[in-house]
Length: 140
Ligand code: GDP
Image 1 (tube, helix red, strand yellow):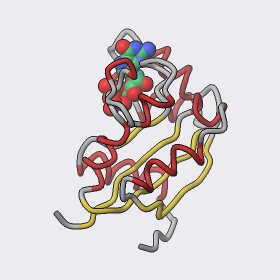
Image 2 (cartoon, helix red, strand yellow; image 1 turned 90 degrees about the vertical axis):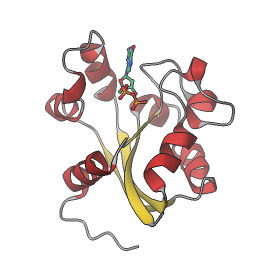
Image 3 (tube, protein in one colour; image 1 turned 90 degrees about the horizontal axis):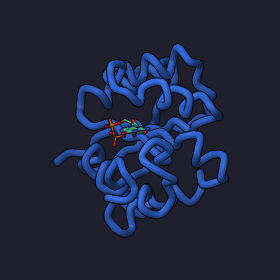
Image 4 (cartoon, protein in one colour; image 1 turned 60 degrees about the horizontal axis):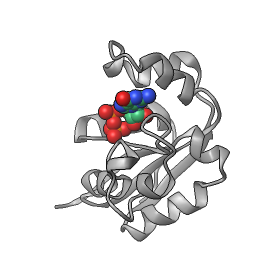
């Protein structure tokens, strides 16, 4: 597997608890390199667009409330098999089901406030990176 890039987000529940460094350390320990990073406070419109795939789910309103409740850190991660690697170190969506040692097991509060987002496929990674980092030169 070649080196690839993925998009990561440290969610408001985690920035509120000052966990940016601890979560980034877990990503780095997993072999992922932070090649772009910035702090963003999402608008309602951005949250609704980012999670549009979930717009008909019962938790959509709550999800958008949570994502706009404070700043996030958006990142581009680079590494071997980065998309799958990041999903692995994030752990299951519900922290109660996440494996030991994963970010969500260690830091997430609940299924909604689960500390991190990570792209799930090559096309979504490319789209999410393009959206949040268009105009930014990303050096490897
Ligand atoms: P992910 O790829 O592991 O983040 O999971 P999904 O794509 O399925 O869901 C996106 C996000 O929606 C999750 O990370 C949660 O923040 C939120 N979410 C998913 N399922 C639920 C749920 O049952 N209840 C609530 N409140 N939020 C949820």
